[in-house]
Length: 372
Image 1 (cartoon, one colour):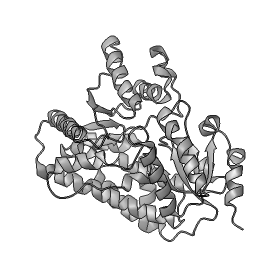
Image 2 (cartoon, rainbow, N blue to C red; image 1 turned 120 degrees about the horizontal axis):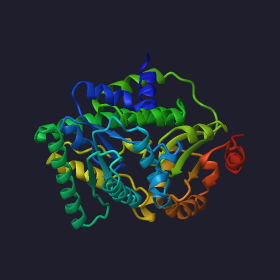
Image 3 (tube, rainbow, N blue to C red; image 1 turned 90 degrees about the vertical axis):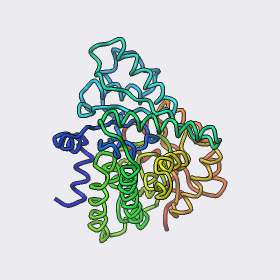
Image 4 (tube, rainbow, N blue to C red; image 1 turned 135 degrees about the horizontal axis):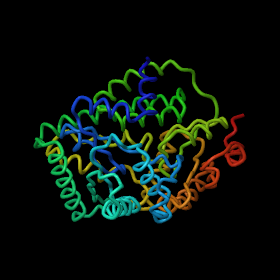
C-alpha cells in the first residue's frame, strides 16, 4: 500500500490507529476543538486524537436529550458518543472556544449526572482564550498547567521538560510535512478534498509516524499533472470531511488553501524550540491564525486577504453551516473587503452547504474566474 493510501485509510477509519495504540497498552485522549494542545497529551505517552463531529451523519441518537441548544455540532458530538463512534476514547478534553464547545462540555457533564446510560468518559475542560492581554496569557498558562496535571494523572507518570520537547519536535515535524503538502496544492498537483483528508489523518495517528508517512506521500504525489481550472480559497465553518470540497471541485475548481481549522492552517506557527517548553506550547496555541470567535473581525479580514495573495487564488468560497454563528459573524465584512480589491467571491446558501450539486450556486464565481 502506498503512503498516500495508508494515510487516506487512517483518515477514513480513525478507530484503527487508536485501537492499535491501545493494543500496545496505550490510552487515547479525544480532543474537541483546535485549541487543545496535542503536545501536552503526547508528552504523557498518550495518543491525542482530535475528534470529528461527523455532522453529516445521523444525529437521531441525541434526540432523547433535546435540541442541544439548536447547535448541530453539539447534537452531532452527543450522537457520536452514543452510537459508539468514540468507543476507543479513554479520556475527553473539550475546549471552550467557540462558545458552543464550552456549552457542549456543560451539556455532557449534565447528561452524565442525570443519565447513568450515557458513556462515563472522564471529562476535562480546557479553558483557553485569545485576547492579547497579559492577564489572558497568564490564565492560559494556568489552563495548560491543569491539562498537564490531568494528563499526568491519566498516564500515571510525571511529564518532564524533555517529554514536552520530544512531543513538540514530533508535532513540528508533522506541521513541516503538511507545509510541504501545501506546496503541492499551491502548485496545483492535488485536489483540496484529497489534501483535507491527508491533513486530517494527522489528527488520528501518532505524530512522528504521521510526519514520516506524509513525507513519503508528498514524494509520491510530486509528479502529478497540474490540475486545470480556477484556484480558490475555502472559508467559513470548520469542515472536517471532504464531501463539500469534492462537490465544489466537481464543478471545475481547485481549493488551494483553507481558512478553517481542519486544513492548511494546521501547518502554521510551529512551537518554538527554545526556553520553557510548556510556555512555548501555550504561545503557539494562543497566537494561532485568526479564527472565528477567537480573533477580531479586522484580524480575520487581514489574514484572509493575505492568504488570497500568498496563494494567488482566483476567488474565495464562503460556506457557513446553518446556525454556525461564529463563522457567520465575520463573513459579511470579509466578503466586502475581498470585493473591494476585486477578488471573486461566492457565499453558498446553507442548504447547498448541506447537500446536493453546487453548479448553480457556484456559477457566478465560475463566470468571474473563467480563464480565457
